[in-house]
Structure formats: C-alpha cells, structure tokens
Length: 35
Image (tube, rainbow, N blue to C red; front, side, top):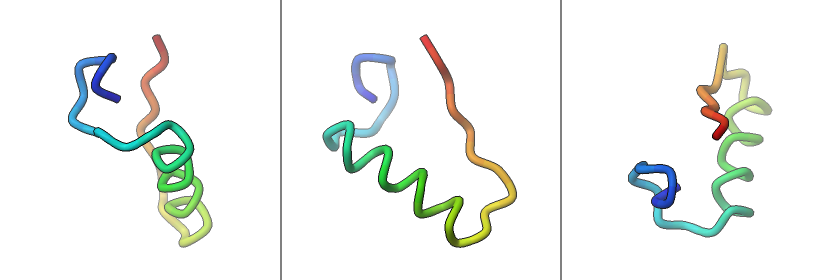
C-alpha cells in the first residue's frame, strides 16, 4: 500500500483479494511485508 511506501493505490479489500487469487491459482509464494 501507498502508506507503506509501495505502489498499490487500490483499497485494502482489492489488494488482499489479489493475494488470495494468486494463492488460489497456484502461486508458489506471495510476498507479504508486515509493518
């Protein structure tokens, strides 16, 4: 997210939905950085 210095400008629900979709489609990993 922008507030974390990233490039994503969508709301939190859409951002998390994209991560969930990556997992559902068989992505080997997703990179999640926690504050």
